[in-house]
Image (cartoon, rainbow, N blue to C red):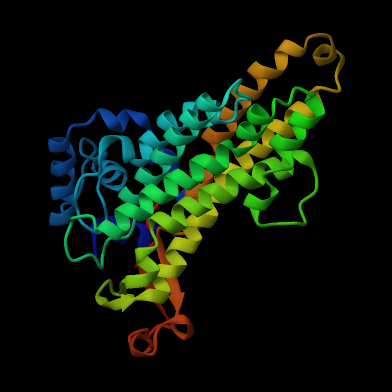
Length: 330
């Protein structure tokens, strides 16, 4: 088993322990380290050498910069420490009420493209025979980005094409129209309806980009860290859990600032000065996103478990302890 996965197995089985680890891993200063430094840290871990105080950051470098399946260094912008600095301005810009369709499509395209790249770079690649991207996978990524871009900008497209100037109607199209994208009917309140589309698109991006994992399966390990086979059930669970965590991230990021503004707009200060709404919304989006990134990454273990009864029949005998382990991805 990879050193990164062994660390998650020993240290990351509870939510609080995972949260503490992710807070350390998401430090953007690790992005300044060169590939040579990362490879050196990786070599120390693979040799099983005891790390001293000077080399104590080797574990952090490996966890935040090296893919646990391939052992390769992740592209700089798709490493977990780069997620917040890159995605924060894209999320804020995509939430803006744009004056035309082109800016809405542009920012949605950048956000969905980066999300697809991040999801693909941090996938489980244990069952892949080669490192080349298949044509099917490429088409899925392109289609996912195209659909999510148009779906995210759909309310703005309707407002612009129909020339809607009424504020109540604009609120309707920006808040109620995204209901079909959410896939839920029981969530009341405009701010909740607005957040559902963002959550649905985030989950859709993960499910589409990583669709080969449930189809081809991923590697599973026994309690001793030995690989025992390829499981499609584990691949499905890994992708589903990651999609849920990403949906929680975007849903909370969209919902909390809207709820905060709804409460603040009842105060006299905001009623006297409506210009305060925009900066408060932008700042609150960044703050909530920054707080939710480590929380969402910690919702499910990086080294997930799947029970014997949920495994394929040919793998159930290998689950001597009643479960097998798998790399979930990020």
